[in-house]
Image 1: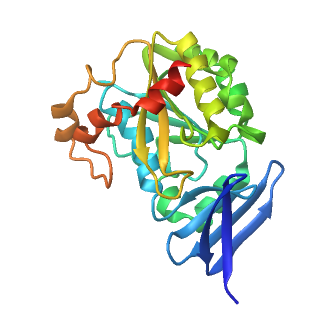
Image 2: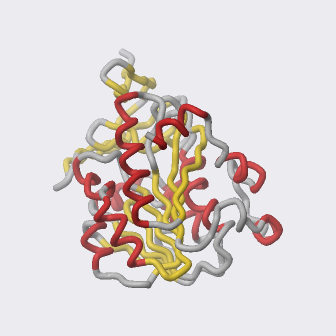
Image 3: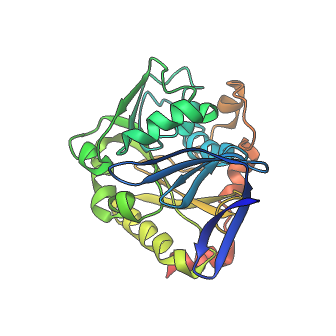
Amino acid sequence: MELWYTDEHTPDVRFSMKTAVQIASKKSALQQIDILDTPAYGRVLVLDGGLMITEKDEFIYHEMLAHVPMAVHPNVKNVLVIGGGDGGTVRELVKYRGIESIDLVEADKDVVLLAKKHLPFTSCKLRDKRVGVWFEDGLRYVRGKKAEYDLIIVDSPDPYGPAEGLFTRAFYGTCFKALKEDGILINQHESPFYAAHQKSVRDAHRHIAIEFPLSTVYQCHIPSYPSGHWLFGFASKKYHPIDNLDEKRWNKLGIKTGYYNTDLHRGAFALPNYVKDLLNQ
């Protein structure tokens, strides 16, 4: 008998993949966590029935979260990652020797524990000596910080359930205060393609733009995500994502990536008209 996992992209659109075996299944205090093994996408992390990452294409998502700001900000020392319990964003950040500390704040301890056991391709750097892992609500954690971080990356699930508070104006305001005077905020911004997700995209962009002097959006293609068209938010107190891109400095680092490069960096900020219209509404 064939087993299939189905991710509901909208009430009218579903994405299915053949599943070989269920690796792990646990009901944590916050959510249902499942890890599946699939022939086409490798190991897959599922939270409350929704697909989070796949072994096949997670590198696209995590590289675009981490390397875009790192190629712009000239001197990142202290980084805060909110969410991201699978470890993929941390894996990309530890490639930079100049980073001195990375605080990973994940609300669900079981996500981290299961990732360490079953998702080594993302969790492999969580034991790096520069990484501190904190198990608490991201909004509560960041409230107590002031001018402490050069970069904050919000690597959160969709804006429902445990992650709902990470898409509010109040949260972005606390991030602004937690950043140093030239800090950058990056957040996953959902897909603009389906009407079911467009309000989340528009609201997040509006909330961030109120708090930050510079706020824009960039894009990439992630095959397993709804529509494949995914957005990220770039907000800064000082740096422009294109004008302050230092291609020579970043390329000299020799960092190995599978998706990101500085040519693509520039193109990622060239948005289709339907996305521009959505953000301007």
